[in-house]
Image (tube, rainbow over all chains, first blue to last red):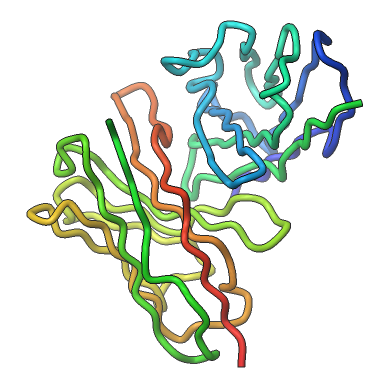
Length: 107
Length: 121
């Protein structure tokens, strides 16, 4: 199975700050990388698919990039509703696997 | 509006069975592959199983293969997960998810709120 290493595991940040979350695959995944947000109530929604494509309805402050084994999610200016958990997920090979998550916390 | 609503979770003893359901609405259910993803308490997300839009193809994670069965009833727009020989490590919130896909990519574009399964004596 492809292992997804997400860093950091938690990140204190301030409103308006620019933050970047990283995700490294144990082998190349050809840009087959998605990002999800999970709110404290458990609600999960997609943010970015296929490395850099913004899901419909997701604010443009979210962006994704990367290639090979290294990928990142950037939030350009944090809003209050952005404090949540974030997960990357690869689908280059089965089984699809998720990163261990990054908790974005208010500083 | 797309909606996925899971049901059937609860407390069950080790070795027993439980069947989860996911009622879908707001889209043509038979057009989409579907999946179950779970999350153990304080842990991350783990893909459990997927099923093709017609139901003929299924895939399972190694941790549940041979014990869980994913199925669907397109006439009822409902996804199921039959869980047999349950273990304590199956304790988790189980999410139903719709799979958006093209030839270039796929991702889980809609998720239900989840249903909690606790395996304990």
